[in-house]
Image (cartoon, rainbow, N blue to C red; front, top):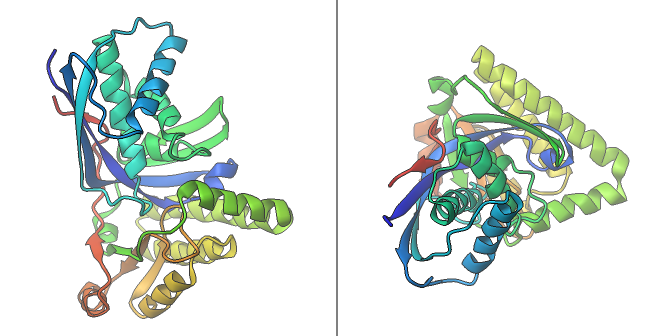
Length: 313
């Protein structure tokens, strides 16, 4: 059997993080940073970590429930990635996508549809994020812009938007690294859950407002209205701060950046130390980059990817 290889992109949540866990919509964009895995058939499986046996069992359980015949075969695997780990850019989702695609093919000898791979990847990602909404894996599998809403496990809206982010938007956006959060995504989801339990009225109001910003952000892209886009980013950040997922150090960074434009955290965030990446829009790129370099703050250009899960070999 030949080597099986897949790659998948990371992602940036433009709007809707945390609210998506409560049945609200999110709009997410795949980014041009990818994770690749190679499965090399062997007589016996060679595990290089403690996670793979658990993920393999999840994929096999998925196949058993579909009453598929499983080809028992060994393998070794190699992973390479340009997606920063633990920064809210979808590293675990991309990993879940390629693991699912690769093992499904390895254990059945055939290619699977993107929708089936996505269903399997959702189950795999739950190992990393117990309360995963599924939006990250959907974006990683499908690529491009995804409008996602999960009201129940059996009722999900996953829409691949036909539009692309206008060039004048992408040219204005940087991804600015505040550092790796101390908390995991699951812990941050629990933090918001505790807030909801303690203060359901206000928390529901904040989540409803995040839903409104998500819809307004879609309108800004459709109309190519960059002023509306910038306003939505600012409103979204304030709401994320109200639900308690932004650290004081990240707020300080954002305060220092205010003279250059507007931004928000993207992903689950973090409160103890850092909050991951900031999605920041500015028409003063030269001055902004000089400021970030002077402050030794790492950043990368924002480049959308319209290619999702891809078979490499």
